[in-house]
Image (cartoon, rainbow, N blue to C red; front, side, top):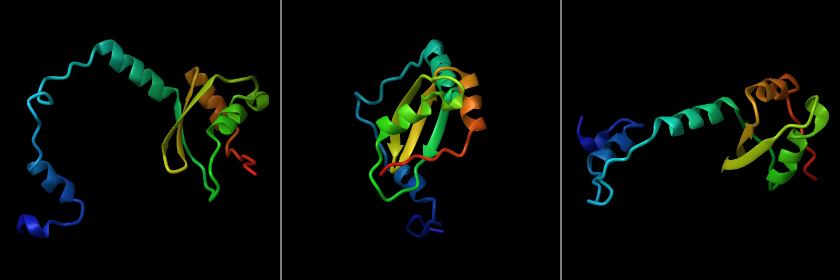
Length: 111
């Protein structure tokens, strides 16, 4: 099979074959062990949520609702938009993730 007739999904592989870095980009990147540990910790305290609506989303309102005492006590929540109505919520502790999941599904009045 020639490169021109790659099966679907292989297009990215083909594009990487022609990918080159500039001299400035070719330098080694060092990631410290402590940074990896912090990232792993944040992932364990994270939930990904997709909001199903045709209306624009208010991330601040969602964060406030998630942080409300409806899950037993107020939560510390950071929210990040990561896609089209797709959000990452980083909570204060792994236990908070368990508490939030226990009261799912989440419904928000966005009107």
